[in-house]
Amino acid sequence: MLKIENLSVELSKNEIISGLNLEVLKNEVVGVIAPNGTGKTTLFRSIATLINHSRGSITINNFKVTKERVNYLKQFFYFESAESLYQNLTVNEHLFYVKEVWKSDISVETIIDKLKMREYAKKRIKNLSLGMKQHLIIAMYLVSDCPVLIFDEPLNGLDPSSVSIMIKVMKEIQTEGKIILISSHDLYNIEQICSRVVFMNEKKIVYDTENLGNLNLLYKQIFEKGGLL
Image 1 (cartoon, rainbow, N blue to C red):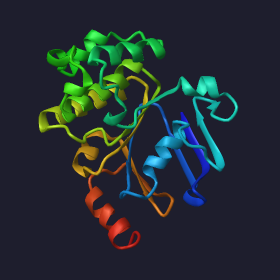
Image 2 (image 1 turned 90 degrees about the horizontal axis):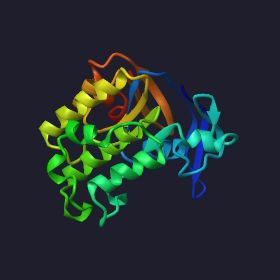
Image 3 (image 1 turned 45 degrees about the vertical axis):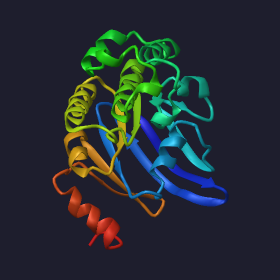
Image 4 (image 1 turned 120 degrees about the vertical axis):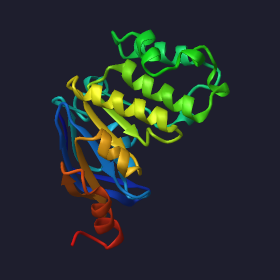
């Protein structure tokens, strides 16, 4: 379980998140929907310990970031963007690095084939398109085999065929007892991928639903009209 209680985060003395609460269980794929600048990336970075929170607590599988940091860090995988990839390393080298660091039993070769990456598995990052880099990042998540996977805009740069592969992979992961958090501005694909959606506004989660058939309407009510009717 991922449990966030009364979380507040300040950056440069500005409160970005205030009193946020969220619980996510195994086998849940939770979409986090919010306009840019409303704190969703800050939330993800807080879970990933890249920034400190000022109040509240974050617990993954009974490990708290403030008390059992080493065990906590083993529970999740989060990779911010393609810009963080090492330009002179190959796709294969990235994947085997993740496998070694996270002590994973997952087969790199199997993941490469699953995501149809065989043609560029030996290429350096500097020679890849954005879509290829996004495929690699998704593959890194799968190779890590972590209990909690945190995806920030993973569909950016993917063509429709690649998005279909991503949706299929997400549905497979959902049956493996993992927890997935995913952000995207593409509400249609969020509906296809997620089992639950939360909306962030005004520094916290303002709506939580498993009814994914009306996301466009909810988005308009929450963000374009200043709140739910």
